[in-house]
Every structure is written in C-alpha cells, then in structure tokens.
Image: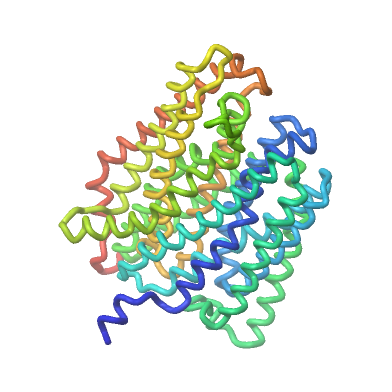
Length: 488
C-alpha cells in the first residue's frame, strides 16, 4: 500500500491537467491573434499594435504576482481561479462584438481574469506535493503539456478563422472554451480545495471580509487596465519600474532571511530568475516581431498550402505537448543512471538553445530569395529549437518554486517568477518597435533590421547561457536540502 501511495498522483492533479487545457484556449487565441486583429481589422499601426501586445503580456504575467497573494490570503486559489475564468469569458465575448472600444474593455476584463488566476492553478498543483517529492517535476511537465494542448487547439482554430478573417467567430470560440474550464472546476470543487495557505487560518467572519475585499479588487482592476491599455507606452515603463522595485524587495527579504539553507535557496532563485528574463524576452518576440516577420518576410506556402501565422506557433505547442511527458520519462531514466540533470543545467542549456534558435533566422535572411522572402524551413527550425528550450526551463521553473521558496514566500515568489515573463514582454515590445512599418512586398527593405535584431538577441542569450554553465557548480552549492542553524 505504501508503494502505491508513492507512485500514484495526489488527488486533484489529474483534474487540473484537463482544466488547464480549456483555461488556455482564450489566451491562445488572443496571444496569437491580437496584433493581426488590431492591424488588419481595426487599422492600428504596427507600432501601436505591438505596444498593446507588450502591455497584454505584461499584465497577463505581471498580475500573477498579485494573484498569488490574493488567492492565498483573500479569496482562496480555487475561488479566484473560477472568478478569473468568468472575467475571461466576459472579455472574449466583449471583443467578439468588434470595434476598438470593445477590444479595450474586453482586454480589461480578460487580463484581470487571466492575470490573477494563472498563479492559482499552479499553486493548487504545487500544494499537493511535499517539498522533497520528486513527482512534482513530472506533474508540472504533464500539466505544461496540457496547457500546450490548449494552445495547440487555440492556435489551430485561430489560424482557421484568420484565413477566413472571421474574428467574431474566433472570439466566440474562445468564450466557449473558457466557460468549459469553469464547468470542470465546479465538477471537481472538493478535489481542488486549498492546502496550507494563510487564508485557511482565518475564521468565518474574517474569511467573508477578505472575500469581499478580493471581489472588490477583481472588479476595480478592470477599468484600471482599460485605461492603461490606452497608455501602452507609459504602462510599459511603469511595469519595468515595478519589476525593479519587486526585485529589490526580494533581494532585501533574501538578505535578512534567518534560515541559512532557505537563504541560499533564495539566492539561487534570484540568479536563475535573471537568466530566465533573458530567455523570456526572446520567447515573447513570438506574438510581436517574430509574427510580423512570419507574415511579411517568410514564404508561408508549403506544398501548395498557405500556412496561417498562428499555425506556425503550433510548432511550439506540438513539441511541448508531446515532449513534456517524454522529457519527464527521459530525465527520470538519466537520473537512475547517475546523471545530474538539475535546474542549473537545464536553465543554461535552454538559454543556449533559444539563442541558437534566433541565430538561425539571420542565416535564413542571408539565403533569402531575390524578393527578400525567407524560406519557411528557417522559421520552422527556429521555433523547434525555441520549443525544446522552453520545455527545459518553463515547467521546471514552476516546480523550482516549490523546492526553493520558503513556505511564507511561496505565493510571492511564484508570482514574481511569472512577473519576469511580463517584464520580458515589455522588453520584447521595445525590440519589436525597432522594426520599421512593414507590409507585403517590403521584405527586402526590412530584412536588414530583422537580421540585426535577431543576431543581437541570439548572441546575447548564448552568452548568458555559457556564463550560467560556468557558474553551475556555485548554483548547485546554493541549492541544498540540508538544514543549518539560523543566523544570529
């Protein structure tokens, strides 16, 4: 019986896998289509559209920090998840009505929901494992595969509707998908109850008071985000300032933390987070500069079939969806043979791989056709390398929080990890903004700029990856499970 308990997955883990699939659909649609919808349907300039996309990424990921705090102390993770999904349903429905104002209000609703509730699903999963439980990494890899199955379905539908220019139908599809996530969560309500959060210590009256505060925050954030989307450039700068401030706060908390073992783990977390910022800056180019490059500078006719821009991103989804479980088994096999496959090794490898993935693109530009169009194979190889790199860093990064974060900082550090991706989204929008106004037939004119940007980002990531390889022994010394006496 003891052996069965050790090998079986904790209650609620399987439910979260399927919930993750449907919860991802709305985000997949907006992530892959927002820039094209804003430019082609609403006649936004490329600069304005990519600025909005940068803020979209920043709020979606940046609010994760607050979501971890709000879910753990005010609403509960499962309540906040369902409330956030409801806002996503309303947001996609609003955008489906068409028009710029409907888009702004829809994004305000959607980003409030998605920004706050993603941390909740990760916290619900990580709480089901003890810190020393090695099954956590496999659970997150499986959950990450489920999320990317949602991306695969969302990107496929988005590409289909994109070729027909049926944006209203696309956003209605996203609305239905998100609603199904709510249904599944309600059907598994008891299995998803919170475990080991500060809110569980509150009495009934205090719980109700905190719940009202949490609901007020949910409602109040919508008009705030609506306004800030109208001021995309200012908002981007504000996100960067907030990110720096939170980084400094974490440095301060680490410096004054008394438990030496936990303090070393927190230092390792900070160093790995800096490396991840480089990774996610390149990764967040996908819905912005990379997508514009694919639309205007890549020959997307493959075997006589036009490849929709969103379908290119399915290269990533397919690799993650299939590779997640396979990588979990592969790593388990290597560890049984004595290989030290740990977080520092995976992080450094991912940075080098995504850097090479970007360096492939300037090579493709060098061999472009006379009209400047780049062969599809180059962007295919680029996305393939980026996807393998993501598989190495992202799900492992989530699992890393459960191992490195002290219990009282777990929600904040999970949110900070996601805030890093939001910060990277703003940086990616800045790089995308360096690209001149593009259009069909202008590949020759814009290829030199793309060549410069992709080379700069690629070599930068490879350099940081190599540096991280050098400091792997130091990081391994920091990450320890051995307790030490508190500092005096």
